[in-house]
Length: 312
Figure 1: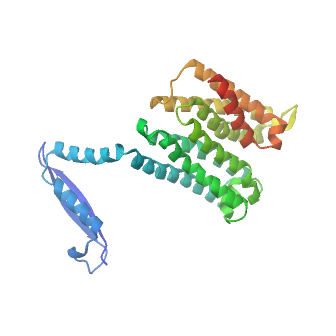
Figure 2: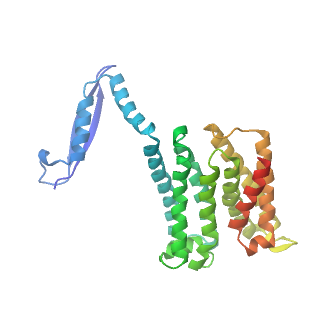
Figure 3: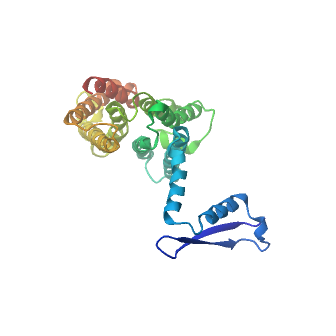
């Protein structure tokens, strides 16, 4: 079957008219103009419909097509879910490849996953609908993306699904059972923060930023520069705890500005102070020996939500 790619060439003949011509590139010798695909035919017909029409008419046609999706919150949320899921999956694939190729130390690679995936996913939240009639539909649809990862962690952690690259990129020692702790808590935190608090709550910002940026940077900095240990926990360093509080706080401020630009939260000195208090509290909890015994990915978001409930 012949394969054909249609190009739409636009030539401006005057200020008010567009003229279109179509060209094709052939990839087989038995090409016939009668054997083009239905998809290409529809594109061709659409171009023919616009041929010779005024610029305002073309703009109105294209705008109405876009508005059709924007006015339907279900369609727009489905598209946003696919886009945000694709972004998260691309990042995971990237770190799986770096782990497979041994480009970074395994523990560093794990923390790069830790820092990047949650923060990148939160950047996608404004893509979801804000229509009042849809209620919390956007929050639920967005939460489906990390919820799928919860199922994946369970399958991998229980040994039902074998994926060495994923296990290596997310575990400390390459044991698939490790995914039932830190990585599972991580995905659960992002899922619940989105589903319960969502983008209009500073608690969601604080929980995810202190978990991803704060805890992730603390480990990276602490391993490299943490020669001076805390007196009450020899597994944690002073510089690591400082790095966690600083990184978590700065990430919170950055996302406060980001969501404020969309009108989801209102920036204020009180909110900034609240983020500082939560980040300091999360850093203190992370440095406690009990946090080491349980899991930082569990204790840090719990502390952020608990303290955030009082200060916001």
